Length: 210
Image (cartoon, one colour):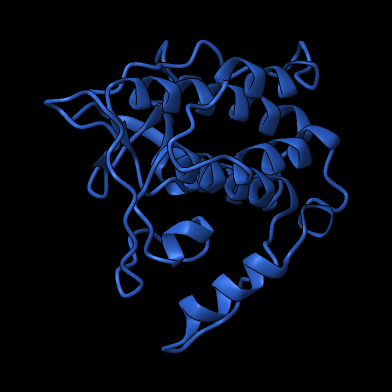
């Protein structure tokens, strides 16, 4: 495994637990690109969160490149033999991921697909920008159930309150995707392109996932 630098969680912590719109918009563009490449290979990550996006090692040419790590919960969205999208299924007692950033569908035990990685990314971006999500702070055996209820009841207006418009639009687009729908990655990226200031850059980002 390559030696890598701090995660986005570390970056967030060292910047007073809040990142600028420019920085998070840049992260959004590159994270979407990385997920596009992973999805192209037939897999969904299943555990998108700040801790799993790392920058390159400080002091090296790659220190501003973004890397996606930890494929321990990755699953196939495409059948290897037929090339078709896997069948929809739901197992309510099966949950994969981390409660804070998991998609609603993951909470409900539904088979993972493109939309789930992107929904988790939406929560990650809002967290990095605002420093907190409405469902944080719950503990106990029913934590997952309570968080799922709050996610389902929280509108995009509420979640993205005080966020720039692209973040709300991104959330709405990915949470309204069908199970087997292929995302329009270019359109999702274009939402954030206008928000990236010239003096903030994490690019180019490594988009090959192996």
